[in-house]
Structures are given as C-alpha cells and as structure tokens.
Image 1 (cartoon, rainbow, N blue to C red):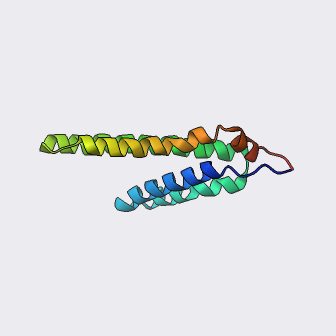
Image 2 (cartoon, rainbow, N blue to C red; image 1 turned 90 degrees about the horizontal axis):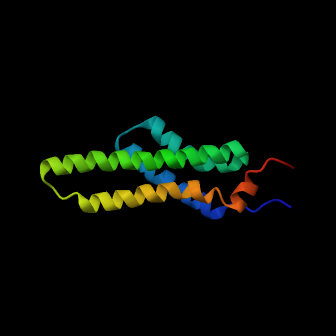
Length: 117
C-alpha cells in the first residue's frame, strides 16, 4: 500500500513558496521566482533527495527572511522609524518558512519520499 501524501507539509511548502515568490516578484528576480514556484513540485518526485531539496529550500527561505528583516530594520532605524512590528511580522514569516523543513521529518513524510514500488 502506498503511503499517503504529507498534506500539511505540502500546504506549508506551497504557502512558504508563494511568500518567497511574492518577495522575488517585488524585486523582479525571475530566477528566484521560478525557484520558489518549483519547490512544491518536488513533492511529485517522491525521492529522498527531493525531500532534502525541499528542506534546503525551506531553510534558505528562512535565511532570506532574516536578511530582509535585518535590511529593512537597519533602514528604518537609520530613518528613526518604528521597526519592531516589522521585525515581529517578518520573524513570523521566517519561522513559518522553516515549518516545511520540520514537517518533512515526520514519519508520513519520510515514507512518502521512500524509494520503492
């Protein structure tokens, strides 16, 4: 019997990818947009390497949001503007972006990406 797909991990990956896509769309970075859209498609491969690629993409997305948070925060501090609310919001986005990496460690996710008939 085939393992059921890890739906929660797939949804979290899709939402995280859309957030990253929106960021890259804002800065008009076509390769970044395409990479963000490709991440959820890796679920179709069902290979253990695909699971690791999705996890690496989730970690990279979280790193992106940390970088964006630090950049916007520095600009706001230099301008004397409020920055704390922005830091909490983008910190939450970064934390959410890590969620797929953790969900893909669950037993159902590992069995979905297991090679075999």
